[in-house]
Length: 82
Image (tube, rainbow, N blue to C red; front, side, top):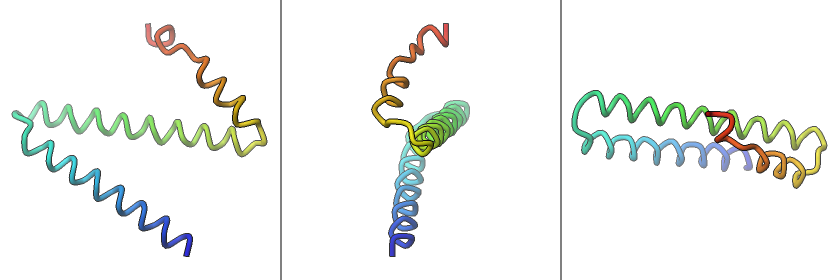
């Protein structure tokens, strides 16, 4: 039952993302802007997946979840990307 509900959740999220993309494609003018929208969406999706996998792996190693969240919060992205 749990697997079925997880698959239903994935299907629902996929459907929502597809509808958002279709809605955005209808109202975005120009092919370049549409390609940019899809590319940025894909990059953000990859970032979310990699971040969640990294967080999951840190938590599953037995580390204190609050300590992991403190480490993530202490990262200064402005210094990293400057």
